[in-house]
Length: 203
Image (cartoon, rainbow, N blue to C red; front, side):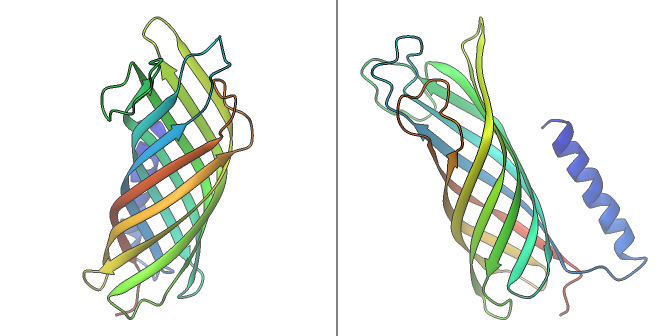
């Protein structure tokens, strides 16, 4: 999972331990699985044959509830698997890429959501931060670091006083720099699902 994910888990355990000692502000902790695709048109690029990258990431996040509808926080996302597609006759085939690929994101996030009283809670997420995209060809790697600006919309269902199920979240990210293989296209499309746990929420 990497050092950052381990550090995140240590922070969560410390918060949970501290919760019994004093009253905490309302904090949301999330864990999601994200599937992302970065397509590109590089027909004129003779150096790189890459047509697309797709990765499955574990996303961890923490948000502080400023109000019932506004939260700010941090999100870290890192690949569990991924594939690069280099075929001349490109046809996206999940899990059967020509090479391995990885993405990671370390971003600040603003979340706007409906109230907590209802069973279904739609939300809008806007984030900005660092991104890394890697294609591993075995004998060498191609990598790019840039900044990314993204947004997503989703809905979560309340399962109890503290637990929410993030049923579906659909989003996109745009990169500030042209990626190493791209002639045109600088967009990543994502679909996510997972769970959010609230600490310190009033019943």
